[in-house]
Image (cartoon, rainbow, N blue to C red):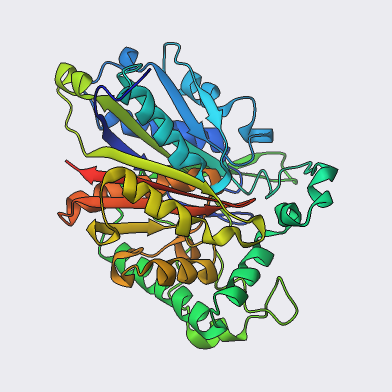
Length: 398
């Protein structure tokens, strides 16, 4: 029977900026290219690590098809390194990235690996929500308790808003605060440690001459935060998921493109290669919830992760609670009694964006660097998950 024989440490953590899907930074950038950039940048953080010590990679992606199909993890390893490195692409929708980190940490903790890469990548510009050919098993509709699996995410947020009595005004106020915190953090340089600048190449054909004009630019901040966001502006937006609903585009997460990568190592590898641990992976939990109110997933997952770690929710100094919707974020915070000051201090997905399967890895990079910068001990990455799940992972600054 396997049991923990060693600790798993994060020794490098980085991410790309997050671009708006469709018309943003990365609308023509492949997700595997974003992932390769994040991996290469993570490797630069550990110059003493022998690349050949990397044994495998685990990469999260919510819709692993098209440009992010063909086992993107292995493809990215092939592009990032000059020697063969294995890779597996895993899918727990919005928790794919943090699940990849958990799986890598578990491999190390039971002694089956010493150095692994974990991360996530998603292009919602190139592969839409639901993928290119969504198909539900007809049996899903045979039982009332499963019908919610087929609900759009926005409708589930409306259900949460109704059941947890989260008003439109509270949702809009929460959304505004997300933007205000994100703008303040950007202006203060809070994201510098975690973001890898990305050079975008834009090619435009000249139909008259037949020539192609090439322009390059480097982006180093998330594209989503809007300085002009106001309560008045948010109040004007119409509900988009229910006729008399309260969930709008303004109090929902942005659809986005991005990638994140972390390098995990055992204590043996840390000593062997002279690495500096940034954080220790402490615990993880995932739980199922009714799919029609999938947004409450963290209400079940957070206490479980805390219990495994032997901690109370007050022990967590920094929560990255993915803002899928303001409605579900507020429902989670109120039900668990979380201190709003410790939840998404630099803004969340409403302002920064939510590239689905990449988000867990991206927000893990945020937590790891924020804990060190603000001299805090414990941080958590948590989110609700489509089809009715919640996930939570805990990190300890070293």
